[in-house]
Length: 483
Image (tube, rainbow, N blue to C red; front, top):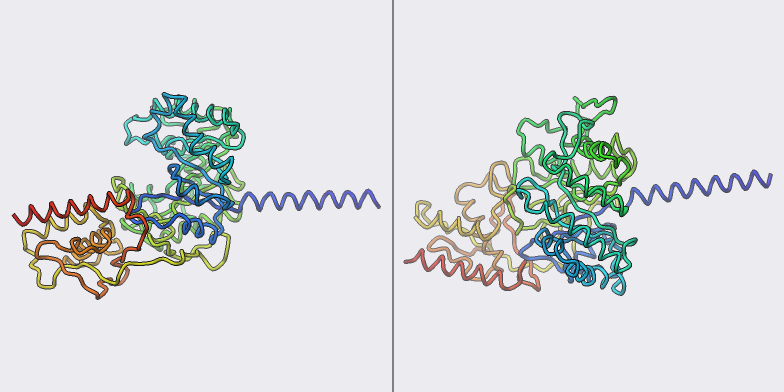
């Protein structure tokens, strides 16, 4: 009886440990924290948001000291980033790599209490649009940062990785055809081998939205997780959504090159809410909740059926991001620029949805709009709108976007107000020659919101310098238009 009891106890203990392990694996979704905003929220506010929402991991794109200091003793795991622009220096100087690790990793891990788990070396450095600019420097930079971590006695604690876009691999038709892109195949194998030798993961960014954006004939339902009616059968493995197919194309690429067991981290996955006809609140909620429901259930893909490691993209909208890929780039956030949630989303920490930022202070309730008496045929209309949109954010204007139903006067008013708010509502930011006026009546209509900017300690992405730069531009614009 005693032996039987002991056996039962051991069996129960193993079961409990398995359950704890499984819960640990499927909990703790990560999120990307971007900083390309004209008016960023205080880092302490952002960290509180992360904790209030039960987010246990964060991925950064640089090593901002203000953010890292705010993450001290937060219990949040951190992937700290190295921008592509630094790869050349780090690839060609071991001393530069050691200095970077000392300043941005060791200083926070050893005494600062920041739980840094990864260093992301570069960000999607092999995008075809870069024309090979970072192909010669990514691996050497990766090797030098790894050597610097080892020298700092952090090699086992902090792992290196390279967040890569899904365009580094390809498939003719089905996932099992997958292999690395031909032009970088050998380089990819070298990088994967190095990661494997150092027990580091392969980090990939997967965006079903881009499949829909790039191909007007792409089946909409295949971008989501609701059961596509014409799934792909790949030798008995069924794919009813493009995320699984994309992910497993990578698994096959790794397997074909001798690294079938390499761990995979999904570095970015999400859906934008504006800036394109397929970027809206409904689709974003549908995709992100579909992904999170699978994530929380520990459901992986046909080739990797267990729990996965992933970071949602992204935390906040970023109104200063490049829109070269598309106007949607400024609208990936789960939260608006002011830290308020866009839609209901259960990410596992609570059933009531996302928790917004507290204590946000806004500027006065006033907006810059087109004068009711303004003549639309005025020669200054076109250059004024162009100037406003070049120096602020007009990406909500367009076909089937949130402000796509505005008339001409509404479009002009939106552009003027966007510039006015970015410049902290200063009087001179609503001085478009003979065209603009400040109003205290909210011009928002339906889904189209004319924002009021938040008050921030810093005056934007590049501090006060950027705001003064915009003001000088405005003065120059007014001078030349009034000549």
